[in-house]
Amino acid sequence: MLKRKIGNDRYLVFWNDKYYVVNDLTFKLLDMFDHQNDLKVIEEKTGYNKRELKILYNEIEKKLMAKDYYEDNLKLETPIKIQWKITNKCNLKCKHCYLGKLDGFELPYETAMKIANMIIDSNVMEVTISGGECLTYNGIEDIIKKFIDNGIKVAVFTNAILLKKVLDKIDLTISHKELLLFYVSVDGLKETHEKIRGKNTFDKTIENIKYAISKGYTVVTNTVINKINYCDIIDMVTLLKTIGVKDVQLSNLIVQGNASKDLKISMNEQLTLKEKINDLYKKHPEFGYIYYSEVPDSDGIRKVYTFSKGKKNYIGNDNWKCTAGVARVTIDPNGKVYCCPFIKTSYLGDLNKNTLKEIWDNVNRFKFLKKLSEQNTDRVCLAIKQGKKGEKND
Image 1 (cartoon, rainbow, N blue to C red):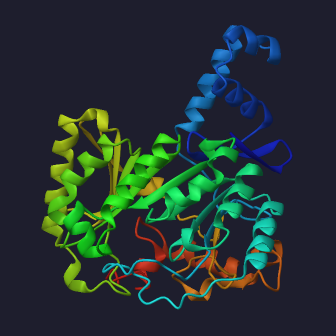
Image 2: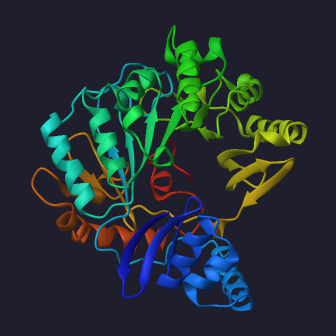
């Protein structure tokens, strides 16, 4: 369990895939629970009797079930999450890519390592590495390993073409595999995937997903739903869950960059797909979870659903909070830092010139937080509202 001290007897912990603010006693009780300590052992370590421990664990459960992962405008000295777009280079040219034509720019290895050290020194708990295609970056395996060795959770967003090559360089030296997970883009079965991503990409992607899973790593996939792959989704989900993918995420097209509006499926098609997914999970409850995000329902409101064990669960409006600027920033391939990568006015500074702490204290962050609190009152992200992320939500 990741832990960060944020005040007197106050800690931010990453537990069960979520962040919580807890005191020292709660952290110790959760940690002992995680390590499956016998109740008698916990009694000896804490000095509480069985009845008192049951009361304490019940209270903890109530608070954790409240789903308040962050306090409003949590006052952090540095961010707890970093999204690092380490390169503007990619080995594919996908038809639905919202980034469009990339210039191939990336910082030298020595500069990237300085940024990595800055992130580590700033007590960051989680880093998402993306691009472009981040695994094309020369030395990416050193950076991933450096974060893991320092107890930082790493999520790698990749098309998986180079995944086996990178894993073969570091797998034997990774002692905490639970800290490293891969988000792999899969866009249908072979024919449709390769219409979108290019020839000879599907088999390599699936092969490397299987390889990562066989080595003990968690793999989550993401699929951008569009006119080309819409009819493939159910069979694709079945394939991915069968080979051991933990979670399957489905997301909507961002009409930007290479992605044209005619690739977007209709609302009726989205609703039909949602019902087909629900039917699939009634037949296969063992598939676990699938996440379908920002789905316009019949009332026109974007919502998030999970499907598991034949049950469809709506994640309500009040449970979602954008963490951009509150707990997370994005570093672009130039080393420039933004609260939100889609909103350029949220620019905070340049890591080639300033420290992460100095950048975090930039006045633009507080201006962005004010705008976030005033305008982001529902599930739709601020970038979508402002038309910075696909079509404007009118």
